[in-house]
Length: 249
Length: 249
Image (cartoon, rainbow over all chains, first blue to last red; front, top):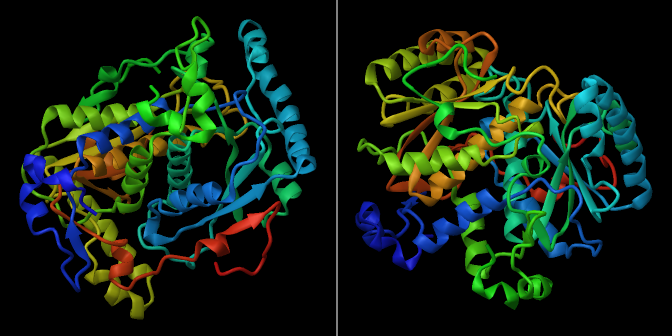
């Protein structure tokens, strides 16, 4: 697992030296990545975008899709519950039905904004359901692993949290593959569950539009379009406890 | 942004050629990463572990902590809401109070398992609150960005989903830095909110234990310890719709 130049990092020299697997306890040396590798991880994180319109129409190779799903499947999960399923939707007819569900919900959403913001909202393209060649519906089976799940005893929503981690893993892997992902959340869950025949106890966590992209925005699209800016990180970091009750909300 | 060898990937040759930023629309060439870079992203995803006991005691450099928080802050968020805060907890006295809250909840949790599993549960170490030199409490401010948030109109939990994406970004960046992270979720939320003085409208999403590690498990710890195995990915992938009502739950 350690790359050849791990020993160059002072914090890891010792463990790189005796880095051979120690059977049978399954503990192996865990060094920092090389500078190049670290930069790649940060590059995926910093250049990932929520894509709505830049999708190409050519289908993704099956082995690439598999790598994305493997990445998702390696997400952390509460009690190793792995509550996720991945429903691949390629048929245009199905994606069109889902788009209709989105469109109805989006018209409802527009009415929730005051008149000033509504016009701006309506000018934004918020999904690529029909344009991207692949959609992936990622669900959370709340009953997987039985009635009592290790780590989920005091917060039942941790199953959904695990599923979101799978989404983010897939998203970052996709960025590295030159594949854009857009997360659509504007729909009535029951409408999509009906279209895909999803059982009662299974929650839809994400509808992802997935396809190759040649271009991405150099900052979040909602910042480009003037909807909302990135907040200063310094204002979001507190030391030892909550430090403001009247901070910008 | 494109690396020098992006052009070697057939899908990206065209965009690598005219890869210069196109002002003023903020769209720039978005190629697949180089093979080395892609491997680094997958390595972070596949070797990340939920760490409970392998923490070293030496403190993390401030610039490293900052890089982890920047990674978290670059997570996707619904309506670019950025609902997260990061409370850094280093004081041993505070971490000890939080551990007491964990310990009480963990004793309650043990009683929820039947007698056979309870003994096994009680042998597991499930947190590193006192051992890791740094804890980060990641919260979600449900009121940030006002009463109507773009994309959150039909699922109010998407603010928490965004915060979970920040957790996963931080976790993967930490892996690349040789830093272990353990997510603790066994506590009554109100107990921790009292300790850290967190307001009513702010939710605790994750308590992360953070510190350098020299070793990590080569598979999820709960698999190593015989609690639960990884599920076969093939059984979790469906085509076009839900394909089983009686699948292993």
